[in-house]
Length: 283
Length: 261
Image (cartoon, rainbow over the protein chains, first blue to last red):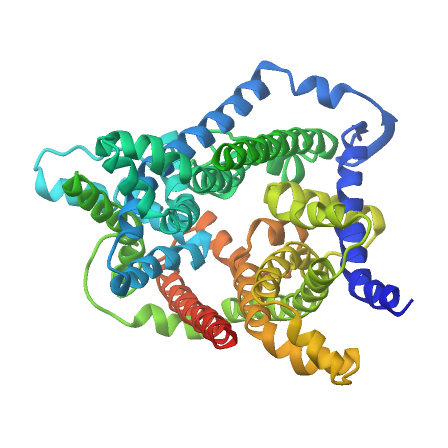
């Protein structure tokens, strides 16, 4: 009886908060996605499927495709840059390794707005990149880099690279080196040992890093807004516009539900793949 | 092969730090342009101290982050204790729901809360922002405190109870001191995330309740001045202090764990 009382005291606040300020709001989004928009920016309580039908317009499918493919490219680039980086770091002398790791963590803890702004400083027409090359090459025509999809892509890679490196590092650092030695003793070339021992054993880190990069980038709002200058639309910006300027909350809700669906499918696939890699490891 | 790895590591560090260093260097630039060097000055920092709107935004940010951190730390710690120390029905369901706020995109959580506030007629001001920040902060605190609770076995608690301590005494004399580094680590993380958050604040703050992030955003959107470089540098210095604090407490975590062994 006392045990139940203690458990109730411990659980009540968290359950209360989650139900009131997380689950109920999600239910309201779900309901809003099925009603009509009102004439003056409000809503009309009539059931409709129109919001979901509009998602399949070519325009929104295109925006969705851009968001998902940008997130994929971002994840791939982060993995390509981050894996060799984490691999090297995990084998570095322990004494200096912590300092090197700290240098990865600093951007991770720094305000995201500031880190995005830094790229405005670099990429704008009279920014550092153009000034630098203008000084080196006399006939350098300034490149218009800001407000392009490339700027958004760079900003996203910059923003989320630490999220890839840290789990990769955690996985590679725990790697049992004797397994690699065993593979090489048995005649495997270093390349073969890498692909058949190191990569499979670090798969949980690869999966976790990819998740941590893919999920926030697919729904990113700030980076496309600041570095894309609103000229190229991503799903996060379209949702923001429905709520802040277009005042079509029901359609914005339907878009949000679709975005959440993509992310949840990604999460389920992640856990499937993780279980797969764990059972492969144990067998 | 080793050369390629070394080149890669150098390039990644350049990529991570050139933008940040550029902001710091240009915060001392006397020109009116944000990225054309003209001369050295402390002028922008002096201007920061005279900027009343900026200070108001700072105060709002500190208040929101402070209150949200206290609430989230208490709720997150109790949640972690319940999950780690008890087996109950819906435990898995609770764990999944608990981590959902950090899995779903920021913008979805933001608009969900906005719709909810409008529907329930909860006024949007600073309190609505605090409530929203707690939603994701509870999840982060729970993760950090759970990791700490998993780090030691509970034979010490059993020993205390065998020696006649009641559960309240056991908690405050044994459990709490042992998990305190985890709780402080979680609180520091929550505070940083709260100060840094833009998207959720942007949707759930009422007009006139500007936090630092929202203030910076409007500066970036409507007229970038070199002052932004100085604000950025101050925030950067601030986050370095916080990382060092966090690592210090984490370091204490690992030494106390070693002492137990």
